[in-house]
Length: 110
Image 1 (spheres, one colour):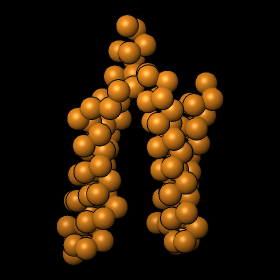
Image 2 (cartoon, one colour):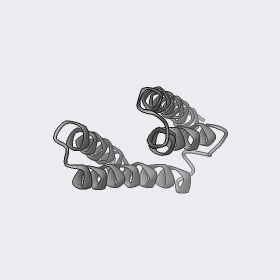
Image 3 (cartoon, helix red, strand yellow):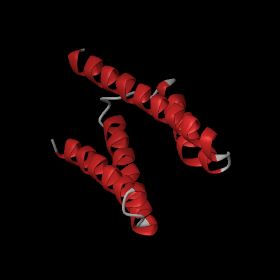
Image 4 (cartoon, one colour):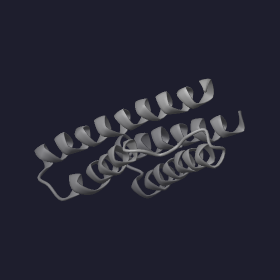
């Protein structure tokens, strides 16, 4: 249960950071919360790997490409294209989450 609290805290930090950055224009504090949220979610994945509940596979590629698209490339492209790239990054990250959950549940049932 403690590891799920880390995951939920990461999601809250991430959403709060996005809200602060894009709605209230608190860029520095918002970015700090986003980074804290990502670190919490990374800690959750590492905990699952240490406890042998999750064995990383090809879905990690989806996560890294999704993060690269969402965080990196959208800042270098013209504005109309940046949101298309960011949306693709989000879809890849959601795909990772779905595959991650399926793998963890499959390992729990074995």
